Length: 324
View 1 (cartoon, rainbow, N blue to C red):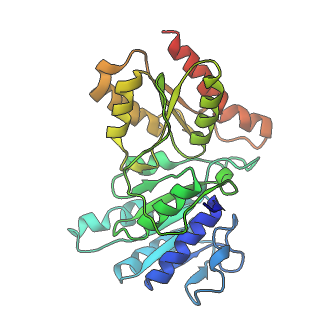
View 2 (view 1 turned 60 degrees about the vertical axis):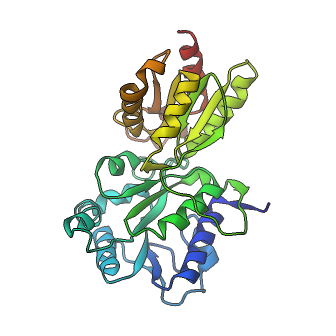
View 3 (view 1 turned 90 degrees about the horizontal axis):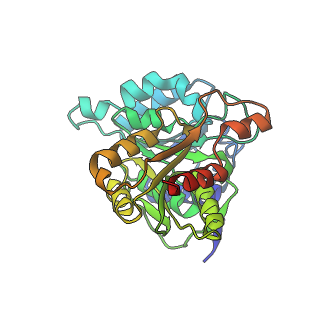
């Protein structure tokens, strides 16, 4: 099977869906001329006249205008440039995009895709490094997608572009250049269906985005010591696949939850609470949660590495759990 980068897989999904559906168009900062700061629009430059638009730096207007476009029958893809910049347009997102379909009794469809990079790059500092997916998991009204592989990125993007509900699509900066198999034939991945990236018997590791790769690296190292990790990639946080998680817990009886967003009140707390509520009798040890330290992201690369989680944190947590 051919291999694509994460960025190429996203671009291919957008190109195919724009060819299929004339109501789709895309706009944001630095996409029409530059092809996106991480190259996610390069494969469609020059192919869709008038449908790839550069905008001024005005996030509230960018996100707010998507509401009007969607209500008028279009399917806008809005690139948010950096996830951190979503905060500058939160009124349009939380009070309009995430509520209008509910407040209209379903009469107004909001097929809006908000997509773009999140997470740490390298020394991008506090305004360009945050993983903020938990905020959008908390407030009802939007589907939250956070893939870890090119295959998942393409299949989930195509599903998002056919949804009549708003979707926010987080793409980790460190994943854009990673490669993986992507079939040429069409496929879609349903929301709310996790993927077991590696089967194991000793500990369940639940992760998303970059931390899936860290978990797989940790599993490969621990396997040398006779420790078997089962790695589950949730792929979407709204909805998230509770059934697959609980079935894995019933098998391993031990759980680690790993995400790059801050540990305090991160989405792992919601998953852990659900496991405690619905599968407590299967646990043989306390659940371990791994996340970023509760500080703004530093500019200094050594400090940045100290703040964000890595495979070593998963390895350490696994050994602690097995000592119970």
